[in-house]
Image (cartoon, rainbow, N blue to C red; front, side, top):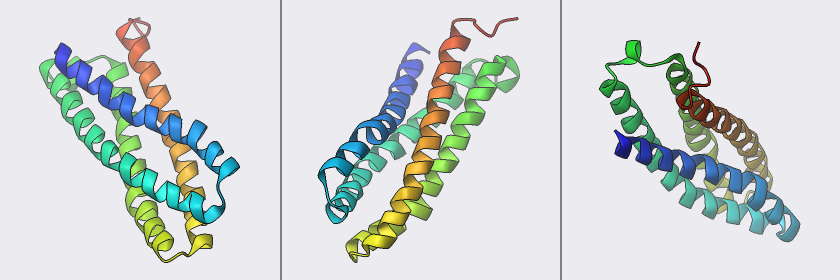
Length: 154
């Protein structure tokens, strides 16, 4: 069980930590230093690399999470905070899939064609959705830590 908790945690840290870095560090630095075409190319390159990691992290999170629930005897035998974590995590996956398929794919096409205005508009949408997922990820991680510590016990 400890191994599954560890790989689950590491995958969460990769995903949520990557969003924090991108949103709070890379984005403002890119705005300060780069002109829009270079900034959009940077984001295309950064997204490609990061999203490969996120797909792997999501797979690991889902497999390890469902397996740990199975080890506890199923959803009926886990505490309520685990239900909340799973719900928030699944919402994050849905948001990520929307970002990837509905935003990132067209974004890359606009960057490749040097349609900077369209790419910039999509990047703005991605930024808002990353902020949403980052918030959900931080809330979910907080629920996990408080729940494991018994903070939600009656």
